[in-house]
Image 1 (cartoon, rainbow, N blue to C red):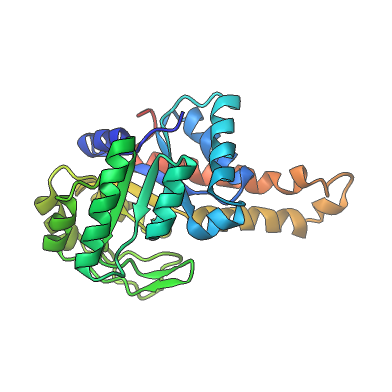
Image 2: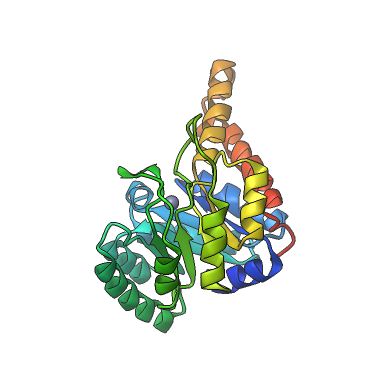
Length: 287
Ligand SMILES: [Zn+2]
């Protein structure tokens, strides 16, 4: 059964580790992440962007697929199904479809409107036992056509949003979505430290986990990051493994064209990436 992300993140923040959010794109992605979490006895969050939601034929299709896998694959570790960078309308659609967690990305609204909409959604989520993530300060890079500049969040604004009663808070600290450019300045730990001091026990979320050096990830966790989003890294490892299979001509040998064979190396590559991240984040054995 899907669970809210609240309990797993409260434990992670107290235990100084982080739970990975791995974004899904199809059946192979979902199965690879769930099986790895179960093998490593780690809690996990499955992330779904609105674009991926459309691609997978809608939120109800995803809820059906994930719930089916939890049962058929006998997954017993805590799993949250979470809308990533949700719009106001998207949050309501996912709540109705059976997601256990949503992110309301109101960072593009004026702060008053962000506060009003976030407050309303917190009420709905509390009533249904779901977790809600809010974002302060835009996160750089491009995600589903939305381009952010990677500014650092204002710690006072973070406290104001945290005090509304959100479950977890994403704050820009120089992190960006997608691949990091060569001239990237790194994470702003001063900003992160100031945010944690103002928001106390609130689990903080680090978006754009792909390509941040391991020691920066560990330092971020030590300063209160309890959820780390990974998306691009699984896409890169899946694509590289699939490319290798085709370039070696394996699809031309015997029944190598069988889609279950074509997708198998990519599936294993996602599993390896997820394992590496769970080890780095410290969530192994924490289910
Ligand atoms: Zn993000």
